[in-house]
Image (cartoon, rainbow, N blue to C red):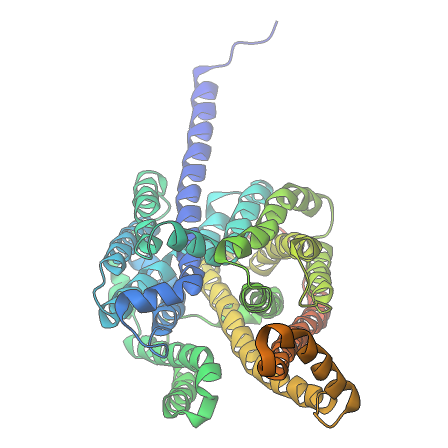
Length: 529
């Protein structure tokens, strides 16, 4: 007959259950906040035309809706560690979630481009505060033997948000209006704020931090990251240094970067600690995540662009194809979690990088006639690869740091992922234009009117059109052939970009072998703040 449990044992079991419940509820609040903040980077991408018409903005001005949010977010992310200690994680995240909801409501009520840009800046500042909180707090809420599931959930939501952004944005705009791109943030934002205030109790505020905040360092960092993000985002569209604003921002960014790094390495209490880069895992892992971020954001840009420009798909059709990657992420997550428990996580990172590269390789042979079926395998490979790589990469990169450095490291980690994405988008946009021009030059050699084969093709097609168009048949034939040539040239340029991304991912694989396998940390290595 088994012994009856004592009251102390029952109370202990109840406390453990309550603590685990609180941890999961607080964690889910962070998941919701992180998903919204990352989603809103891309959600306006497929609705630019509707926003332009609704705000009476020009084609050159409307891009500020996305640029302003990106600049504000990349500035806010590194400030997380300092502000979370000052206010406490609970207060900081609750204020950020409430602020995001209010800023979203203000965006929906915008009456001009100027007001929209202002509210998007506010939305990016508070949204950027929610991004690093998820991974920083994960390592505090859950012991090492219970992190597999929450790490997987955090990784999937961070990857799904940019993948689903254009699809959700296009669907919402088609079925309702652009205002709902922002109004839809309010209910989950309020829910995340309530859950965080109710269940996220980790630390106490440190008012003494206020007197130690390095204001000059914060200003230098904001100028450095903000101007750098602007130059990367607007450079491809404005022909880089041919535009005065891009040249000026590049110069300001370079000077501010020098001032920021020299001051950060010199002062006693810098706004952002850089000592985490002395850890080999963090340095190598952050480099890898920058390349992964580059591939994620570049592919999220290239795929909808190809499907829209070359295939002529609607936003809803594009969303249906892009959803395949989302389903692949969701279904492969349990498998990746199990594999991470059975095998060395560094091996899984390599498998993930190779899988993403294989997906890029598959789409480096596209033709203008590709349909939805041809995109299934590349999307599945990318979805699986992103989950396999990102889940383990986060754990290996942050897993060797002492607890006191996790919050700051999480901010740096997310900034580098976003910066990698910005560099990837800028590079892809610039190289796309160059490759289109190169392929036009190559195609022009084979479509010269003096070539017999080309002249015969035009004459033959013109003869077929003569019955309907009369003497305009030859002109119409030239127009049709020019349109087909445009599709071919665009497709070849897209193929080149996919091949380039494949090579970038494969070149990153050797860095994985510099990573050490995470082990148990020294509990006295640092205190949790």
